[in-house]
Length: 395
Ligand SMILES: *Cc1c(COP(=O)(O)O)cnc(C)c1O
Picture 1 (cartoon, helix red, strand yellow):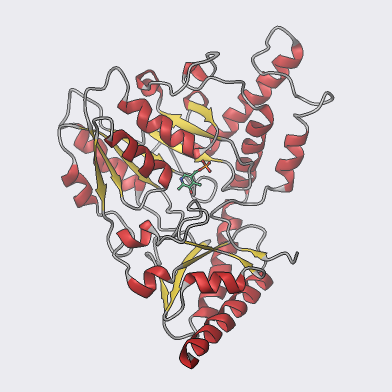
Picture 2 (spheres, helix red, strand yellow):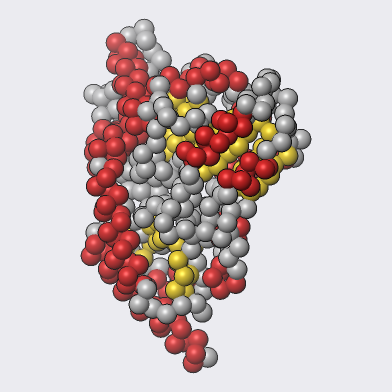
């Protein structure tokens, strides 16, 4: 098999070699494999300290308290725990949730499930550029609203919501409701380690984190819950009481160490990674802009440089992807809709239609993508778009 150029970093990233090494040291008899809850012996104690050091390292990146982090299997579980945990909390009597139509399926499907259980959900439509209008959001709030859930960076377009401004506005609006809390949850799966997040300054109540979008292992993440709100969440599972009983199950030391190592690396190289991504984005954009009928989807200013969503007039994304399968690993639609070619719900919600909707592909890259690879990918795409257009003319 030829190894295609990997340009699907928004689906998952390759693990940093430093992360793999740190994880390997937590697996075998010689390593820190013990159960971090086995405090009766020193091996368990060691594992416990490793886990708690990792928790502090992650808290440092997010500028929050270590005790406000609950380890989960990833952002999907963190999103489920946040939404269902609050909805079904014994303290909660309210029924209305606000989210956006461009969220990840882990939010949308959880909301759909809640709708079948007596909750009502408003799915805000973004502007054409993918940004949620703050006024529209504030107008959607009713006395029955207990939760606003919005993503930080969109996984398909890279568009960055201004969560700082939204959090401030919601905090002000809270004053209209002295008898209940209006929670703000942020799905930060695509932004942690790529954009600075400061929970000490931003009044976010809950935040979902994933390791594998940022050079860490798959299958681990965490949910940040601002301290005084933890007891308000209902656990999704019952078990051994780990993580304050909110997320029972033996803590996977290797996964947690892997996540912390990845985030420490990311914090260290945040600016370097950003500059690298910007440079690659510029190369690719310039190269593809020499084609006619090219559309970049989503706001091009308020956007992560490492995700490019693009449509080519008269070229379907499925034929482009099929022909480039052995050369480029890129994505169309949502990566999670495996096997089905379904138009992107994100672009559709942004009001993008027709060719531009069905032709959209996502190219995403990162720390290990070289300028040479990007230029090669750009050339390959360029040639294939021209070839497919020529072919269509000849039919
Ligand atoms: C990848 C992703 C998720 C799911 O995260 P997992 O850790 O894979 O469960 C949720 N939200 C967004 C925005 C994502 O990109």
